[in-house]
Length: 299
Image 1: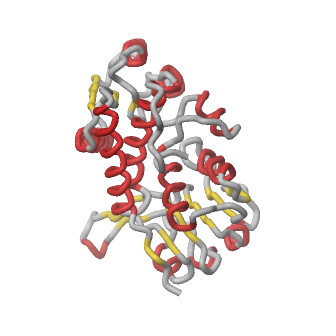
Image 2: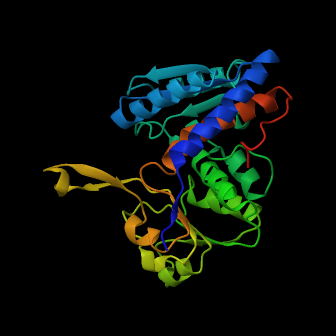
């Protein structure tokens, strides 16, 4: 068996098209969604990510508000900016790019953002709403994974799902979303006994553990759908001295021989994260204005 490759780039492009179409309808109704991004410091990876967010925000017709602050910006100043954005009717989505410098408390920043504008889905209120099956803002990466799974399978009801990883950003919300779609869900982690056998029972296997190529083909149930959230850099001596390459948490070649479908790294889950950020911003805008939410872009 050779797995179908789930093309995250193509899927993300489709999501952005849907977002752009809904933005156009909102503009006809006199509303333009706005996304504000805060970047504290000069982390190169974060700067690239923020730049891509801004570019894609404008491409779908939304307003983009970027706030780049020096690395030594006091925590109180960051919180004051968030408060200002919370009260700005032109801003429907707010995110502060993580990680922030050590002198700033991540949780304070995350929970200072209005839950209704928390398009990252990290606010404690949104976490609680998601966990209890209520309407919330959903973290972007798990939302993207869910969209791809629904596209692949239609209904997920009754499927056995294993999520490897228990982070607040991916593992836990991913499990909550799968449970909400009536999967039977197990979260595996570093202390899980006989994790290989557990994974072999999964119809859906989501890898979000942050360990390069941890999951090999003999962990995968024949025909299973494998969603690889991991993004890891490893040495690539075949490309030259000091060269690196990106790999996931799944050993792709062996898993692809067993799985029914699999996401590659790069080009799988990654492109969906920004696409779902845009989708969340449109959703937040609709909710703020009492308008119909975009079909197919929410959990």
